[in-house]
Amino acid sequence: MSALRLRKDGLTWLETDGELVALDTQASAYLSGNPTATLLWPALVEGTTHDELVETLVGAFDLDRATAKRDVEAFVTDLEARKLLEEPR
Image (cartoon, rainbow, N blue to C red; front, side, top):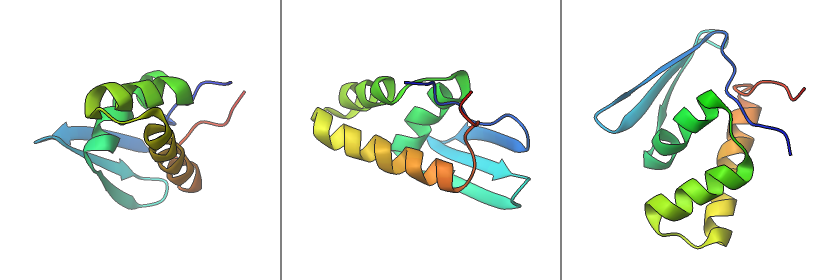
């Protein structure tokens, strides 16, 4: 499975007070994220896989793998819809 990575162009972000705040200048959109997004975002900056994201959630929130997998799939689907991920190579 290919790595998931946030696109670098036109996307800036920061974490403040435990909340993710991002600006997509290409879409002129301001985004904020819940604790799950705040946890997963840095891994997506570096490049990660679905499985690594699932394991991160399982460890951080004491979730079962099925729930964590559904959460990751929903999050990644939202990022794809917003065109925030790099195209697979």
